[in-house]
Image (cartoon, rainbow over all chains, first blue to last red):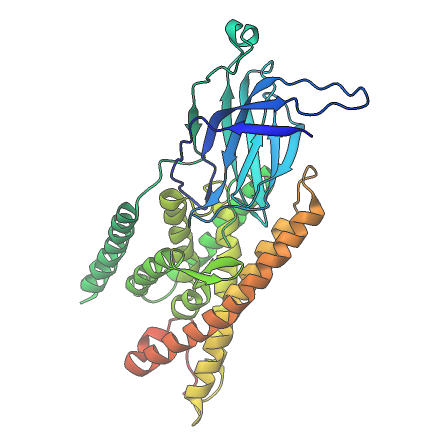
Amino acid sequence: MVTILLQLENLYRVASLGKLALPMVLVSQVGWVERAIAHSVEMQYQTTQAITVQAKYDTGQPFVNAQVSVYAPNSDTVWQTGMTDQKGQFTFAPDVTKPGTWQVKARSAGHGSILNIPVKPPSPTATAAPQPQSVEPSSATTSKAGYTSLQKGVMVASVIWGLVGTALFFAGRKR
Amino acid sequence: MHVPDGILPAPLSLAGYGLTGLTAWFCLRVINRSSDPTQGIPKAALLTAAFFSASLIHIPIPPASVHFVLNGLLGVVLGYYAFLAIMVGLFLQAVMFGHGGLTTLGINALIMGIPALIAYFAFHLRDRRPKTSNHRLITGLLAFLAGAIGIGLAMVLFYGLILFNLPSDLNAEAERAALATLALAHLPLIGIEGVFTAIVVLFLERVKPELLRNPWFKAVP
């Protein structure tokens, strides 16, 4: 039996903007812990850096069962595919020997988004230390900073006011 | 109905911009040749505001939540101005809320704008026949039809474009199933938009019927 431990050290939720946003959380240490050995099956564990991607609609609903494609830096071929879970999350462990900008695409039924994730090369201490090492959590989102309902309301009101002003301007000119 | 960035191939987005440019040029030319080109601007501005804010009103229809598009209504009331109003509305939606995207602005303008123009021609079939006692009924029915055509045709274009441009690295079967589910969730919207368009048009017909007239269709007396 293999237990997969997923420790979320820090979860930064970044409010979304747009039809769909992918706040990314660089977070976790995934450890495969040895539990059972039978018939000479050897098991090992290693800790590795994993990235959890959270996808949701701008209404706040999680983007569930979306197809996720992960692209390694400077590569057009898919490195890994998967699906988001019921929370709209997808976790993968990037190959740290390929530092650069990893790209994660999520799409379902014509909706979707692309997220760029910077992956740094491993530091010398990371390979030497056997115990889980804390990684600096980072986060990013696909679009600009999220807006609160109040900000959205002000934006909508100002656009409507601009358009009403246009209407009044041309209506007034006619008379 | 809004195609976001990165879903369709780049040449298609470019073609979308090209076709939208041509259509916008054509609409502007027709408007410019009318007796008073600025006459329709006030109502076009007001309906752009309605179109812009309508997409923020979500109607929960399980399993998805859909939003108003109102392109049929814009077509009926604005005629050739509708395409331009939709273009402006889509641009504002894209830059402010990320609905759709800037690369797909052309595609989205075609998806929603062309059905709006068709809805306009469908509604103004009523001017092709003399006014009879059941004029109000015919106006209501044609308005319903125009509203339904606007959103219905936009849906067909949206799903068609997505379906015929599935990238090879995608599980096509799963994507088709997801598209079918979303399309089903949007079906009630056709009826809702049709009824909403009919209500608005019948209201305008009663209080300010000249709003439904335009320079391009002369009603048969």
